[in-house]
Structure formats: C-alpha cells, structure tokens
Length: 72
Ligand code: FES
Image (cartoon, rainbow, N blue to C red):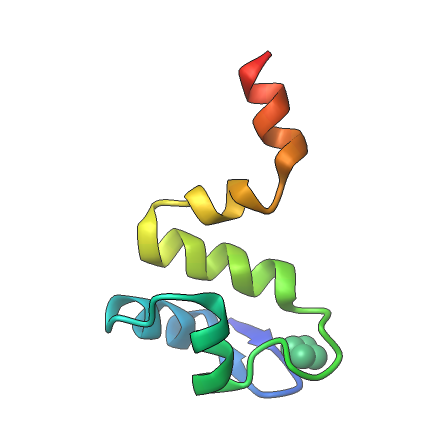
C-alpha cells in the first residue's frame, strides 16, 4: 500500500529500509522523502517504520496517552 502519496512511498519500501539498517525516522525521510510534503502520512509512516524496525516501541513513544493507560 502507498503510505506517502506525495512521494509515492509504500509500506514495503519503509519496511525494506528499516530492515536494511535505516536507524531513525529522520534517516528514512532523507532516503525516501516520506512525510516531507503535506505531512498527512507521518503517523502511518512512523507506525510502519516502528513495527519494521523494533517491534513497535517507537510508536508507543509517540503516543504517551497509550503508555499512561497501559501503566494504570
Ligand atoms: S502524503 Fe506523505 S507528505 Fe504528503
């Protein structure tokens, strides 16, 4: 599926970049241009990247309300 319409970046490409050693979302943006135009894809792109790179802790990091709910 296309995650970033502005730059035609797919979930497969994000996953591939993560698996090939892309270590941060900033680095992913530099390599692909994802979430660098309108920004509407950023949440989805971050979620796909987090799932592909480390099991999802980065996604939780960007949703502190979920972390608080999980701790309660
Ligand atoms: S859809 Fe990704 S920057 Fe616009």
